[in-house]
Structures are given as C-alpha cells and as structure tokens.
Length: 140
Image (tube, rainbow, N blue to C red; front, side):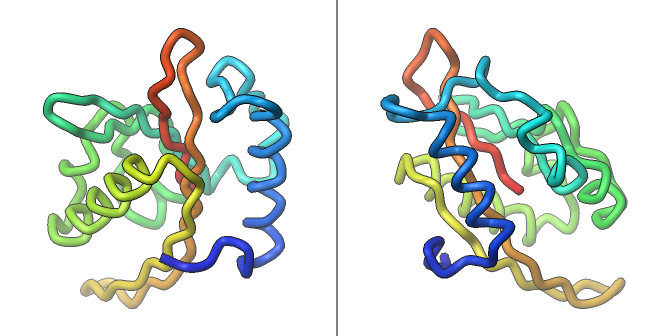
C-alpha cells in the first residue's frame, strides 16, 4: 500500500472525482457514476463487482489499455481467472484488503513475467449499489 495523499496528480484527480460524487454519503452511488467524469482514465479503468459468500471480485468492465497490457480480457470473470495465477492471487488479496478497509487505497504494483517487468499504481475507489450499503470497487 502507498499513501494516497502523496500520489501523482492523476490519482489525486481521480480521488477528487470520487469525493465529489460521494458528497455526504459514505460511498458514491454506482448510479451516479458518469463515464464522462472519468473520460481521461477510461482505458485504464475497470469496474469490479464484489460477490460475497464466498468472497470474489468479478470484472464487469476491463479497460482497453488494461486488457491489452495483460493480453486477456477478464470482463465477466473472477479476478482469480487471470494468469499468471500468483499475480492475480496477490491482486485478489489487495482487493480484499481494500474491501475490508472501506476506504480508497493506493497500491504500488510490481511484478516480473516472461514478457517483462511491470510497475504501476492502482487506486481502488469504493462505490455502493443504490439499494445496498456494500461497496463495490473501482480499480484503476
């Protein structure tokens, strides 16, 4: 985990959009999510739906830049379906921590696979269904 307050400007901008959308609520409502607000980030954005019992994270939207970088489109699939398995298990653990924290978190991602070394930041922003208080996660 990395301190979100020391994040690069793009992450701070995303956090600002999230804070504006949440207003007085604990989480912004999923119905308030307007793709136009996130237009500068859409290729690097994915929407994850949280399933409970057992806990799982299902990709509902996988940004085109993310899909291209990972050479797989996980839309509609569990995060645990991603390959290589150890990397996606680590991502599952990061999402689980964020889910349990119920706050935006910034993760520094670093791993090496045969295709090369990857280093990037992932900000996870919780959203809620309109009828539920359970947050959903919006990683970027």
